[in-house]
Image (cartoon, rainbow over all chains, first blue to last red; front, side, top):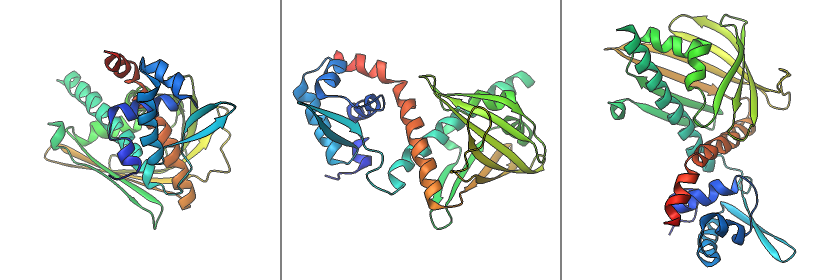
Length: 106
Length: 167
């Protein structure tokens, strides 16, 4: 299986995990708390994200913290898809605005 | 209907340029207004849950728009757009710069040059945007910042997804 950022964001659970990590570094236990899930299940997802290079881990004392890895690779391609989505979402909103303008003109 | 409207997004790394092209089911004059009038711009410029807040906008050559992208956690990213040329309702050009809330432009981040073309055929308006960056590094920087915004969009659905996962 491919191991890249696209694979990382292909799964809804992994996307939620990544979104959660935008708030800051977290331990698997803390993440499991958010999910109402067991640590073991979360670790499996985190491992996959780490394999894809989307997250990194750091040991602090006895705990392992996971954080988003935004700088590992110096290629912009990884973040392009997200950037494209911003424009897509922006323009979908504009469609709605234009529709409203059209209705008001009638 | 929405599905049949063209949306094209490409990046040319050799010229540090992003190209965005989109069709809209509206006449050219309405689309022009949506891009050039402050109150309409703020309604769609920021992808939800971000909001766009324009402090002031002077749409004329040499004029500028000062606005912030406001995040759900209270973050504010200020930008200044300086209009360098305007040909209603077909084209305008601007230089986009990052700034702080007091409108001091970030000198470490060179501005990007935007060119926006508008054209209409059969009631469908096409907007073609090119965003040229000075260096590949500034293009990458912008993409990374965009990435964070993009993910906060995802946060919008976080609560809902978490609730579903718990079931």
